Length: 511
Image 1 (cartoon, rainbow, N blue to C red):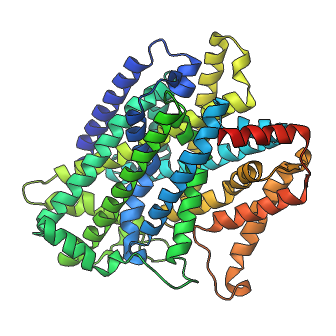
Image 2 (image 1 turned 30 degrees about the horizontal axis):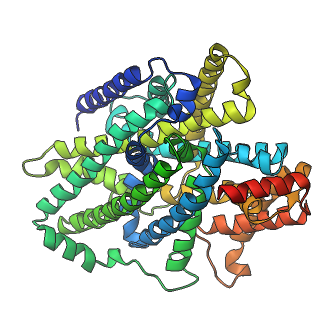
Image 3 (image 1 turned 90 degrees about the vertical axis):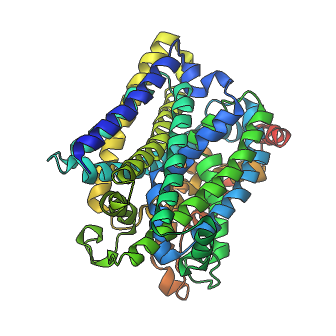
C-alpha cells in the first residue's frame, strides 16, 4: 500500500474525530468529562462500549489465534455473559445507589482510606498496562504499513498515536468519547463485515458454504476436554466470567460509561443488549480467523516461512497474520484491490482508538477523583488539574508502549489477559470481601497483602507444571490471584465494626 494513501486515510479519519470533539466539548465541565452529565442515552452507551471492550487486540489477535487454539476463545466469550449478569444485577445497583463518580469510592465507604487508595492504585496500574499493550499493537501496524517505509522511527509513530488521542479527548472527556466511540464502533464493525464478505467472495463461498466451511474446519473446535490443557472449556468459561467482572465491572473505564446513563434501569438495559451484541461480534472475529488461514492454504501461502511473520525464536507470530495478509495479499483481490488494505487500516485504527481514548479518560478520572480529590476545587482549577493529569497519563502510555516493544514475545491477547490476571486480582478480592463478608481488614495491611497476592500467584504459576502434575495456567491466573489475596484479607481481618455493619447493610440494600 502507498504510504501517502494510508497517511491521507489516517488524516481524514482523525479530522472527523476532531470535528466531533469540537462539537461535543463546547461548554464542557468536569462533570461532562467524568460522567457526561449523567444524561447519556442507554443505546448510545451500549454501542460505544462495543469498540471500547474489543480493542485492536481482538481485531488482530483473536483471528490470528485460531490456528493454534481453534475457537477455544469462544468459551471465554460465553463466560463474559455470566460475568455481565453479575455486573448488571449486583454491581450496577450498588454503584447507582451510592451515586459514585469513581467506583473505587465504594471501598472507602466499606473499609476505609487505605483500601480505597489500594483499589484505585491497582486500577491505574491495570488499565495503564492494558491500554499500553493495545496501543503498542496499532502503533506497530502503522509502523509497518506507513512509517517504516518513510524512515520514521517507531518512537515517533507512538508519539503520533498517543498525541492524536490526547488532542480529541482532553477537553470533552466522556461526553466526547461517547460520540467518537459510536463512530469508531460503526467503522470497526463495517470493516470486519466487509473483510469476511470479500474473503468469502475470493474463495467463491456462498453464505451457506461459508458457514459449512468454517463449521467443518479443525480450527473451529470450541470444546476442549483435557483438564490440564490451557484451552480446557470450563476453565476458559470461568476465566471469561471473572475477567468480565474485573475488567468491566470493577474497571473505571467501562463503568464510567455505564454511570453516564440516566438511571439504573437504563444502565441495565444497556448491559443486556451489549451482552448479546458482544457475543455475536466475537464470533465474527473467530470466523474471520478461520477464513484467513483457509485463504492462505488455498493460495499456497506458507505463513510459517515468511520472515516478516516470525518471532525471534522462529515461531509464527499469529498477531501478524491478519495485518500481513490484508496489506500484502488481499490487495490483489479482483475488483477490490487496495480497498482491502484500506478496510483493514480503518478497522484497526477504529477499534484500537475506541479502546485507548476511553482508557485515557478513565485514568484521568480515577487519578483526579481518587487521588487529587478534585471536587474540592472551583471549576477553573479542576479544568487545569484535569488537563495536566490527562497529559501526564498520555506520556505514561508512551513509556509503557516503548518498554513493551523491547520485551514482547507472546500473543497480545495472552499478554493482556495474563497481565490482567496479576493486576486485577486484588480488585476482585477487595470487592468480593466487601460484598460477601461483614468483616473488615486492618487498613494498614491492605496494600501489603494486595502486593503479596500477585507475587505468590506468579510463584505458583511459574512452577505449576512440576508442582501440580503438569497443570498449565491460562487466563484463570485471575482466579488464583483473587483467591490468594482474598485469603490474605481474611487473615488480617477482624469481626464487623459498627461502621462495617452500616456499610454492609447499605451494600445489601443497593444490591
